[in-house]
Length: 197
Image 1 (cartoon, rainbow, N blue to C red):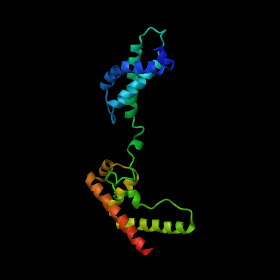
Image 2 (image 1 turned 45 degrees about the horizontal axis):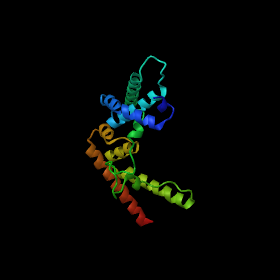
Image 3 (image 1 turned 120 degrees about the vertical axis):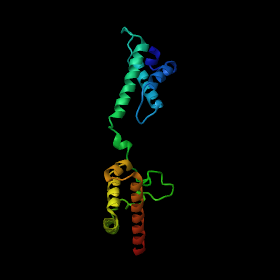
């Protein structure tokens, strides 16, 4: 144990192999929302590492008891952290690189493809981009049904399909259909503008 604590990789490897079954057994008695048993096993192994790092032989406890305490605390801390929903916005983001239904595009146009690109500092391009954006906003403002407009607004705010359906009082399939219609209207608008330019 002291060799592992002092940085001996081989000793640490032996210690981890010896206690992995114990850590796996501890992890199997807990549940991590949004995770799996391997995540909890990994957290338990972090707890084991901390036990090796922090164990003091001058205290009246065995390493195994101390390791059990550290492993349990690490697993419980991971579960509490996961249930705080602190990282929910990061974990449930809506990507413009996916289709409105949330799948990879596989050649299909995504909402990010349909929206205007980033601003450019060249005056002629800025004027054209501003006109394009105004034209798109006008077209969307007059060409979308209220359901389509509300669904697009919520989509751009990062709401999930379930949240949109709940907010708008319909099912997720209706939301998906509305966003598909919005995408088609944006593409149609852009194709019409290309002909004019």
